[in-house]
Image (cartoon, rainbow, N blue to C red; front, side, top):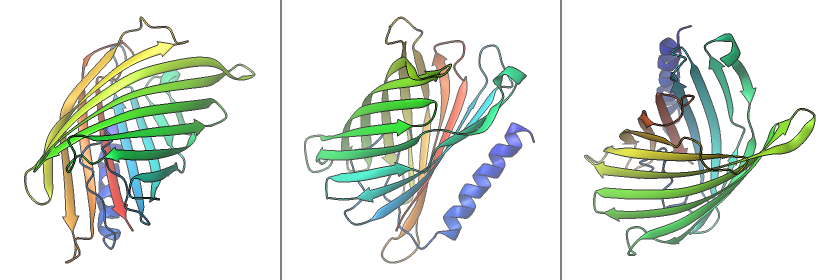
Length: 265
């Protein structure tokens, strides 16, 4: 199966899931690479299906990596939520030495807390902490979330630091790496259902916690569609961001696409 055919099928599945699950209600996520300063309402549960496609590097035009993640988010207070991945997985196609999978990735859990509201307050401020573990990797991640919403326009910034310990040979979690990344996302409400904008991604890898590696920059448009089904505005939503490579390492994908389908129940 060609990568383009696989992508079309994945998109069709996402659309089918949205129609089949039309009794639920999604929150107002408008970005995919940027977290926003909001949480799932207290006592509610949200399901998110993530799909990320990365393709082409400087030397491998037929490289493709497909990543999938299913996450449950549970509102525990008006300011906090818990998240659980069940679990993420991926597979790769391309040259023989690039092929991989299907392979399960880490199980993960996170907590997000919002200190101030992006609409009512001067700026929305939040944080997110995540832990992930598998046989090959143990990771810790911390994120600062800043957001401001003016009427139909939203602007969100994330600063993220990740520490990762990988299994090397027969020794578990001995190879350590880090990465600093930041995102900037903007979204404008065009209609009651459609939001358009763009996102920026900057990555600074730190192998063995040493700086000096090539830093990666991606930029692209963003679109989000929310479809209410009844007078209570129960709905599902799907958000997509294609990112184009601007500058960075030779092994980085020249194009990547992330889609998130979400439903609240």
